[in-house]
Length: 303
Image (tube, rainbow, N blue to C red; front, top):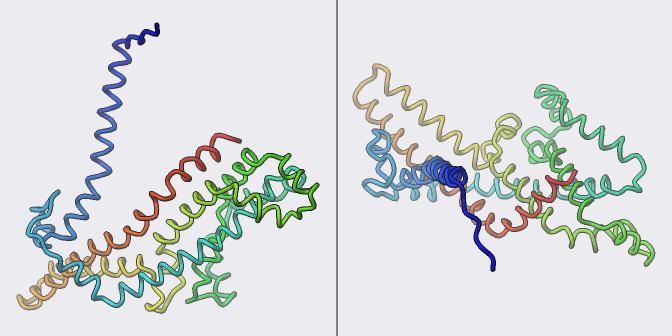
């Protein structure tokens, strides 16, 4: 007969402390989400005055109407989808073959190449040399300026290489070669189907990075029609800050009312765009969650 172990006072205290900490962490994480969602459907005057601090007040959908009626936002949404899809595919095409090659023990010079790749993770040319390089390559104001400089992440290459080393048996590779399978066919037909977890993890990492990226477009893009959604949101935030600063100056009543109206409109659109821009990531993540957990754990505990 199995008897349950009696918990000591120290164990009970630790358990209670853990639950308290998790509850506080939940509040810290979930409050901004509820606030943004509530602010997107609340009257902007209540939001700016602090009357709305958690739940919606004076419900309005004007913000979402402005979002869906604004062609710049839809154009930025389309650009972001294009940059994310093409950029993520390029990342996978570069990262996965490189990681698999570095994981092979029979790859001559893999230590040299691994050390060279790791060196670039700690030392880089900096922003100005990178900009001059992109300019000399003729990539300014083009999609290539946003996806080519970040075609691969050294950290992701290391994680994927560790996954291949710890998951793909060497005997499987030897058996495939005995059957006459080439390295390219081995990688495409055997290795990739067995590596769904790490492929999903890499796609999620790179996809989220491209979706949230705005700094490269701020530097390399001059045409507003090519701006991603995050740059459109940044323009809205800048407009709101400029309106707030201007209304604080000594100006006439009519001008102040007009600026206040613009600030309220920018506030509505800001929260609406934040909600709309996060929906695709929230929708995709549940389908990748099980691969995400498995891939990250295997890539992190095996050295």
